[in-house]
Length: 430
Image 1 (cartoon, rainbow, N blue to C red):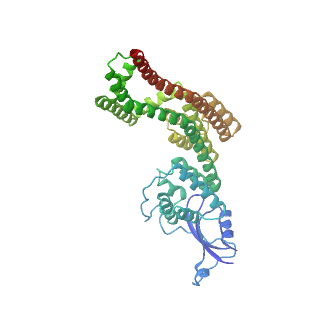
Image 2: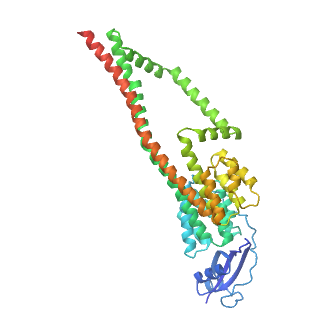
Image 3: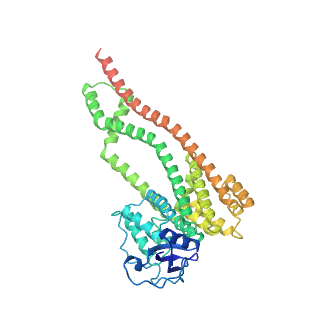
């Protein structure tokens, strides 16, 4: 049987290397996994590849004494990652493909090399090449990914670290894929639901703009040339058209919009400003409940995924807090983390702030009593995702006729003003 040289990680994260004898490479990987190691690279020994002198052979099926890798972890000579846009979809597809490759028996290094070749010449491909190089030099996959926080979030890297420590990395990657797919599905539902009303609104505004800028001046010249008294509706329409076409009005409007944008950005750049704006968003009459449903679903799903993979409660709360886009809820999560007495029970600390809803708190308390918090949180997330879907459907169902009626009223007012003038001219000629 051939000899194989390997590099791997122990469950404590120590980098090791050695040699073993196995029927084939897949059997070698199975031996390493059975010993509780996480394979990084497994290659046929040089004596089998190139005819070089063979190293001292261990007993068949035995793993050679582990020794630390010579290169220090975390130092890499890889080139900087190319500039380019890397989206959450790239990360989701990478996670799914990496899970499949690892389940097929590939080492992490080989899987990363394969995925990097698929993205050759792209920013994500360069990033994967750098991650693979860091792993060869002794870094954990989680540590290598954590060096790219703009692409791989703390949630993502902590999930990977939990999978490495528990020896269930392929399963964790599959759960991460499901998490990203659910988040993408929610975004797509909201986007697709708002697409039709947005198109109707843009078309309506475009029609009104074309009429006011190009057609109304011609009607105005024609009406004024006849020298007759115009109806009030027509005079108002002409006044609005002149105002809208006035350069000073446009400049003033642009200045106001610019000031509003600057004020918004300045408010968002400070913690107090973000807190105030996020608090207003949660209290909006129509959007507030929908936003809360999305945020609570995200919080519950993230916390459930982390706890199901063995991440400690306090660490999971911190990561879930970091993923929250609303600062009010993130701040309350941080306060709840400080209130956790023993690192296990979190329902009472979350309830003390009176921001998280009773449904979430009650389901979480039941999960703590039954010893299955992740399932309880997943059930909560499912309920809020269902509520989010219903709210979005209800909102868009209401929004479509509202937008159409508004556009119809504006266009109808313009048509009425023009027809009133035409009828006035016609009656004056009799």
